[in-house]
Image 1 (cartoon, rainbow, N blue to C red):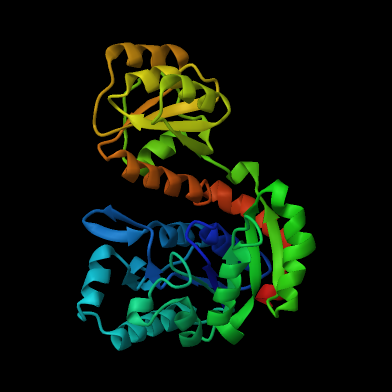
Image 2: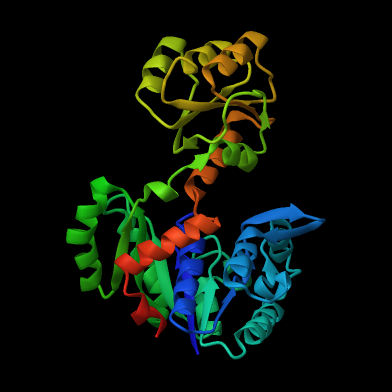
Length: 352
C-alpha cells in the first residue's frame, strides 16, 4: 500500500481539492483508495458536534463507508489547543488514536490519501505536525504552495527541510498568469537545484476563482438586507471603504468582482460604492443597519447588502479567508481539479 500525505505551506492553498481529486484519479486508475484527515481544522458546528467539512466532502466524493471520528480522529479546535497548552492532552495517546484509525481505514486499500492540517506546522503543540504525521504513517509527502514571487520559496525550502526524506515534491496551485512564466522558467529549476523536486504548477483557473455572494454571506455569518438583489454573482476580491467618498469612488472604480467592506453607519461610502460597476456586494460591519435610502438604492442597482455584527478588522479576516478558500470545496471544484491535475502533473507516477 502507498500512503500520500498532502500538506501545505499555508492554509487555503486548495489542499482539499487536490487531495480528493488525486484520490478520485487513483480510483479511476483501478486502485482501492482510502482517505483520512488526522487533524480536523476547518471546523463547523452541526447537531451539537464540531467537525471538519473536508472529510465530509471526501467521504461523499470517494464513497467511503467510515464514521467521521475515524476520518478525523483529532478535532483541532480552539478548545483542544487550549487544553493541550495546559498539558491536558497526551501526545502519545493522540498518536495511538491516529495510528489505530489509520490502520482501520487503510485495511485492504491500495492507496491512502492523508490530508494535512491548516498548514505543515499545525499540530506542533502535541508533536503531531504534518512532518510527524508523515513519519508516523510512513507516508510520502506532497507539498502544496502558492507562488507570488521568489520570496514564496523561503517557505517552500523551510517546509522541505522539515519534511526531509518523506517529501516527494512541491506542487504550486492557483498561480497567477503574470507570475507563471517566472515560476516555471526560474523558480522551479532553482528548487530542483536545491534538491526539492517541482512536481508541477497549476495556473489560476476561473472556474475555481472567487465565491458567490451567497457563499460569502454564509462564510462570514451575514444577514442579507436586500430581497431582490441577486446573490449568484462571483466575488474574487475585496476593498475596504475607510476613506472619504471621493477617494473611495476612485478606488472602487478601479476594481471588479469586488466586495466592499465598510461600517454600517458609513452611508457616504455605501452610496459611493453603489455607483461603481465592479462592486458585487457591500459587507456592512458593526451590526449597524443602513438607512432605508441606501437599501432602496441597492435594490434598484441589484447590489446585495450583507450585514455582519463583527467589527471591520474581524470581518476583513473572515472575508479574506472565505475568498482564499474560493470554490475549491465542492463537487464541481473537485471534478475540475481532476482535469487540472491530470494535465499538469504526472499523477500515475505519484500513485503507483
